[in-house]
Length: 89
Image 1 (cartoon, rainbow, N blue to C red):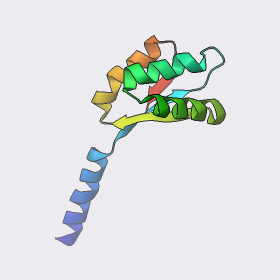
Image 2: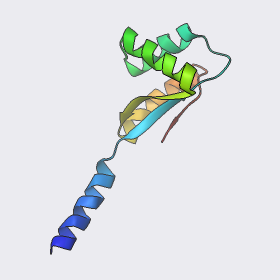
Image 3: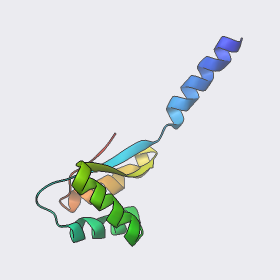
């Protein structure tokens, strides 16, 4: 019985795991464009958008939002529409 409970909990953990919206660095977009896009699309504060943009610049990518995949799809599309590389993982 205990094994069955653990198995059910493992399945529940997988279902509830949040997806990540990742933005990638490129040589095209300006800092201001990425910052403004994160503020508009992801509802970041100015400071949060600036920090994410610096991480993107120096590390090559940054997780800018987490949550259920269905809720991230529109944000990902908004970032892509702004000409910024992004994906949900």
